[in-house]
Image 1: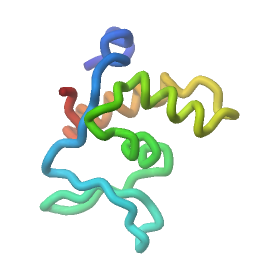
Image 2 (image 1 turned 135 degrees about the vertical axis):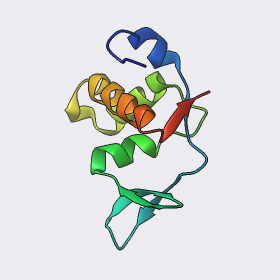
Image 3 (image 1 turned 120 degrees about the vertical axis):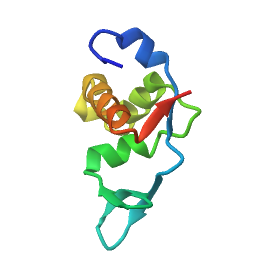
Image 4 (image 1 turned 180 degrees about the vertical axis):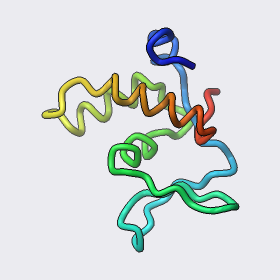
Length: 97
């Protein structure tokens, strides 16, 4: 999915974590991580905040709204979130149900 060309469609989409990944806080890393059989992906703070809301029930628009409410001084976060969702989908961390 290309976030720039399919923005209305992607906002309605409901992302879920791929089954082979487990999302969790890793105290030793002081960060959220994605664990998978061959290793681990350490996520930056923004990616961790976004993936924390990817539960297979919230749409991308709902995730954007929740993060904008949590971080009101950040302004419109939708572009950054859409860009991350595109990367996460390309990396096969998430899929759309």
